[in-house]
Image (cartoon, rainbow, N blue to C red; front, side):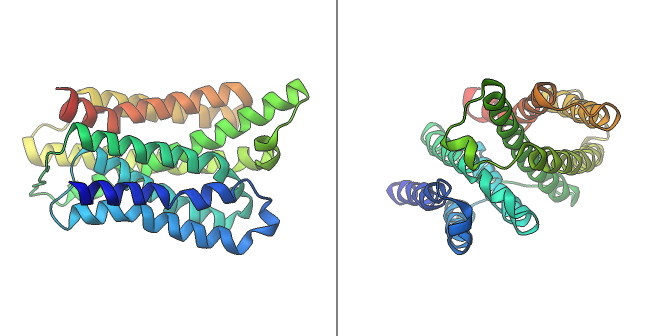
Length: 265
């Protein structure tokens, strides 16, 4: 238990250099940003690896840590293609640190070892699609929050240290749309794999439980905002609200259901 807590705390500490670096101008930190991103990735991998060495980590804390790991991978991939995306570190790393601290708290509430069994290969496709969807919609929500902050400062004709370091509104809008498309495609694939998994396991193709309802609603919300952006070019507060709502729905469907099932009940 003491060793596990130590690993979890070290995991959080290794995020701090990347977070502190985000307050510096990106032009002077090009090499360090990748070094500290790798360090953060290693920190994020510590706890899941330590869990997997002993048992399958099916708990909600483990799921959150895997999500953090995937968010870092997606963040690195996007940064390699769009260098301006690194400027969102100032928002992304505080969020990831908060999630990691929350996972430590969840470990204290529930230290049960959840063992995973399945006779279907569809479960792996379903798990991967679920994690990728939640990671991408999380990044989209952070991007939309960046847009909200920038627009608010423009409206009030004010600026602060955080908003001056963020990407431009146009850059954020472009990458936000790409993340939403990616999230929608993966979410649909995950939903289909879930239907197949349900059918092979129970003989019933669709059961309207909480996770299914939240997932369907999230698919609809993302589809609506993509449609509105294509037809009307809607941006700003309306887009932010839609994206945040989709993020909330997927939070309830993914870690939310696990939290209630494994800790509350």
